[in-house]
Length: 509
Image (cartoon, rainbow, N blue to C red; front, side, top):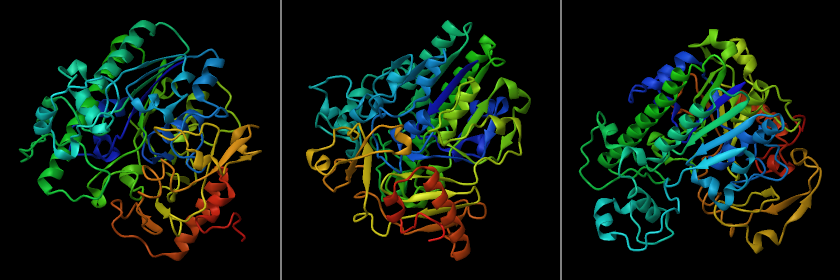
């Protein structure tokens, strides 16, 4: 068995033609859909980037216990299981968050890996005398910084290194992925993960991809939306949206290069291919840009998934309504390689759904950001359940790797830490239970201080896919609350996770 997993970052499902998108031609996603099974009710788990990747490696949700952080010593990681079973795993990525303090450990689970540098604010090249005045004129003020260490500064330094299309890091990722296939297409028992930061912001694509997405904008480079409400004039907002579309077209082209390589090497008959993303993105819908701050609307939470499996090639070009989510991909790959699925895994293999179009999948799935709402969907309704007060809720991080995205936990955070024993997901490890406090570095970057509470909301996403009209339906809300409570229990949520949402741990209570 061989498998390829392509992971895009921030890939909007509703923009892809196989899912009904009309604004961006995606001929290679169409090719992929014709070769694979399309999953129509696939959802995120833990948000955003690194929490999603921990779900992918461990097959279980982590946002109930932890914010953005490293892979834990007790995490049972999929590449390690494959390695123990004699399966060689190789990662190609330009996702620079793996190289930060809060991304430790993930890459080292693979048999080998290649890291391409230069996306977004990656602190890569050292340029201490850059042409700042030229850049001040070139870039919009919201994207300019003269301060080394600032993401915007390093983004400008990185983009100065892109002089030809071959310099784009996503192009290099697919170059390296195709190189792996050229070298190893005759071998067996390997897993290749090609992961690119694109189409994550800033939306920097080769200029030719802007053809067809013309705007009236004649100002400086504007392709990096804020994580905030939309306040820009329509011309500026449309320019940012056009740049996202151009970058999506670029991603489609890179996918096509991989499909071409699989055609040329004739490996479809003995190689599995999975294509998905970590989450979506708001480009003005609901009056918001980006993610993290606002409710996890469908544009963020409902994501694409395509799976080609040689044993189910007769189902190519079909779709599935089985309800699935990110943690399901780990047991899917393990089963494909004949590996036992660990008891800690809460995801479900999707191979039964490939074989049976009537396979229903999960009854419901929960998803969200640590410290924010816990959301639940049954595929027809979605329910956002917020704490009564984001800033006063009782909240703890459970970790043996006390690091945030960029820095370790501070002394003030760890001063109140205690040890928890017998956590179901920790396989016998004693684990630090660290109180969340406002001075935490995470609290004001991805945490409650920047989340905007909306109150609990219920939507019928079949009748109201744009989520414009919340329902007032106590009976339906009670049903969704019961599903949410069941999801918390299945996810081994700590007792305070129920209390902070105003829920009892038992349905009877």
